[in-house]
Length: 634
Image 1 (spheres, rainbow, N blue to C red):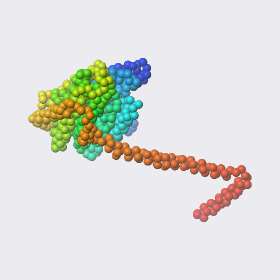
Image 2 (cartoon, rainbow, N blue to C red; image 1 turned 90 degrees about the horizontal axis):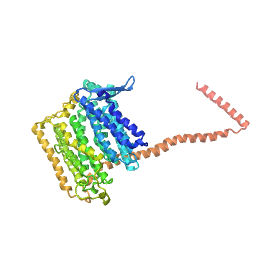
Image 3 (spheres, rainbow, N blue to C red; image 1 turned 180 degrees about the vertical axis):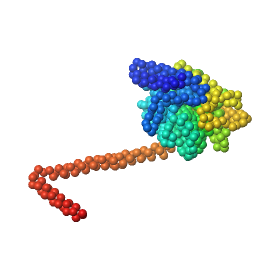
Image 4 (cartoon, one colour; image 1 turned 135 degrees about the vertical axis):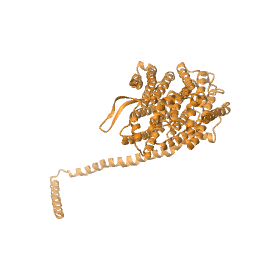
């Protein structure tokens, strides 16, 4: 079946073309179903591929054609099918299908209905291209495609200037990261004359390389990952991406864009295994991101902004795993996070739908009774992300923190930071739950009269994702709890070939202790949230440190001061002085000089024969003078 892997990205591409080209025809009304069926077809093919490759220890390359073929460069358009890519195929197409299905009802009646689904299909196609590419260039094509689609979808409601501004912000910040990705590719090709993953892995293991070179390459790719996966300092675009429709938020945060950086570094494990200094930086940046984003999430009042900063924080945990070489743990958390974060975003969309577009949780409350399905599934997702067993978040987050703890002295310090971030995760998620669903209703009478559960097309994906959030963790039950960690068994050949051990060295007693601490911290966060928000006062203003967190550490203001304003001043100077007075002045000056000169020269054309004879005599005299001067010089 692997030879037909090209069908996986082909179906969404066809869906994009059909829905995009027929958006104004009668077929446009069926765009939602056409796009959903396209992604479902990709999921079914991905499922068949997964069952075929799960028992294979070697990757398979499916060559389609030569993308670039010159005397100095040959880059094939080829797909690499192995355990890692097959897992991501299932995440992208599976979660993507549920989001498409949900969107049919959520976007019903929107003027851009067909356009929305064409963009969604293009988004899925680009992400599939990213994870299937057998070399960095094909990955980069998908990488850029994902960036383009995020811009289109974040600013989908383009008539709102703030939404288009958010789309531009995402586009620009991702381009900054992409520069790092490009430089990393250039460095690799200049050294090895190939960008294919398997060839690079062999050449790097065989070569004796300068550690500083490998660190530079690894950091360049990490810069690219900080853009796509929203790490410090390129993370502020992701919360602003909430400007897009809620299904877009779910797709970006759960199944596609933000996981791109995790996938890229995991796929590049053969580089990072030779760059320990770069891994240390990734570990520290991941921990800092997890902590800062978690503190900000504790005091956000927009239901989607809370979830957005939660995503940034959880991505920080994934990068912590990458920083200690725990690639399976990172991928495991990608999977479980996809389940409960997609559920949380789609659940928030159900709440917003019931509240007639309201997103401020201070104006909600008491939604537990009218939105029973939404509340029940949202509760499951909150328990999962809080790391309470036996739900999925417990297993994946616990595995990350154990690997971090086992990573020497620095790892133990980072473990403390990570556990504090985990405490706040449980706190802010149940703060969100209690304020939104518990207590008395704080909205308007009009909103109260129209409160109702969402249609079946919106609640069905919630139920499916809730089940996955409960059961998803069992693919990675650790041996200490009697499991065999099926995911690690599946992915281990990928790391063994790179010489990565991917095992922690902790006693069973220590593992049990760390698990107990993790559970107690999660429960503590829930209890603190309960006592603080069981009787919520929406009029109480944040003060002191809480106000600092509510204003997002003033990071956007800092960037505005040290980056945006200076660049604006420089651009104004370049426009007014360099462009208008300099370049335009020079060009226009030449024109004015020629015009002035010609206006004076034309006076010589008087039409008088005597004047012309006089000029001829003067000319002959000048020629004699020049000739005499030239002879004297020689």
